Every structure is written in C-alpha cells, then in structure tokens.
Image 1 (cartoon, one colour):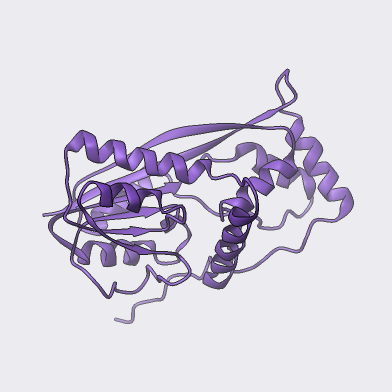
Image 2 (image 1 turned 120 degrees about the vertical axis):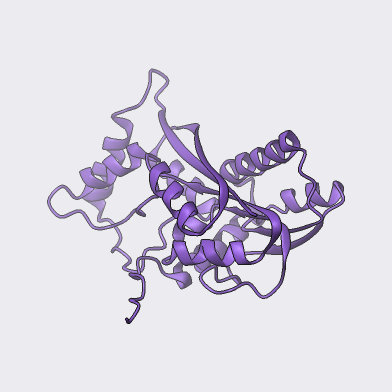
Length: 252
C-alpha cells in the first residue's frame, strides 16, 4: 500500500529565512527573546526537579546558547543544532543521546509524527525527549486582528497550532513511554500591533506557511491595528497569551 506524503503546510525556506532575520535582529539591538528564555528556564527546572543528569545531550532551536551553556556547566556533553541546518523530518545523523531538547521548532514541521519518531530513534534506551512549542490558543488578539483586517476573504497568515490532546496522541503514536504533555501561559502586554509583530520577528516566530499571503494594504493594516487595540486594558496595552506546550517522553 502506497504511503501518502504529509501535506506541505510549512516552508522550510521561509522558516530558515525567518531564523536568519532573527539572528541579525538579535545582534543589532536589544531584541525580544522572552519566549525562548521561558522555554530554557522551564527545561532546566524540569531537569533539576527530576534530578536527571544526562551524559550526552542534543539541543535543537536554542539560538541564545543559554541551555547548552547551562547543561555543559552541569557536566553534560552537548551538541547543538539550529533550524537552518537540521531537518527534523529526516533521521538524525548523530547519537544516541540521553536527552534531546527541542525548543519552538517542532510546531512548524510538515511531518510531525515522523519527526517525533526520528527524535526517539536518536535516543539511548532510557533517554528522554523534552519538546516545547507554541500551542493552540496562542495569540488570540492577533488572530482577531487578522480577521478584522480582511473580513470578507481573510488570507492564511497564521500557523495551525497543536493542542494538548493532539500532542498526547502524537507522542503515543511515536512510541514514547511515560509521555506527558502539559501547558502553561506566558502573558505579554503590547502597546501596539506593530510592537507585537516586531517581537515575533525578533524571535523567529512569524509565519512560515508554504503559501505566503500578500502584504496587507494600508486600510487593512489600520483595521488590524484598531482591532488589536480594541482589547486594550486601562493602560492602553493589549495582553497576549502564548500557550506553551511541553512534550516529555522516554525511550524505554
């Protein structure tokens, strides 16, 4: 029976271009990095709580270098991969690892079940995967603003996002044991839609859909700005929520 290829929702080239742009922005000014900082801190807290001390680790997607530095300080040998060079939908060349950490990366691959299988295959027996990604429910005000910008025929401008139930099913499908999927909210206040978009560009979190939408026209952009600020609090700021899913599983 012929196996169908997964639908091509995301573009690796657009994803890599966004990553390159983020690195330039990070080097030129005091750029936003709070999403990745939150993910890194969470991973370190989990490892400390579990008292898990991996000998060999693969870190994917941490362009800050903070996680690798911290793990090396704890005695781990760490390999680092970034989303410009690593294709999660293909087998990993190195390994096996005692721990693989993926940050803000797996939510934008076309074959997520296949990517999870490849990550599991790269683990030692008794090894663990921790994968953090932006989950469903994130950026609700931005989504409303995009619909308001083009009320008649809104273009696809934002990613489909994985929810808790789907992530749990995918971890089971990839044969992880003792798998756990949990979520938490990271709330950030913005004075304008433009500031939010700038922060997303800083952190390589903008769209990498395979079918890129055309730029918003002047009138549509103003509608989006007005709709975003319609939810502003008494300080004139709109609070957005990043729902961060963390997938944890073991290879037993």
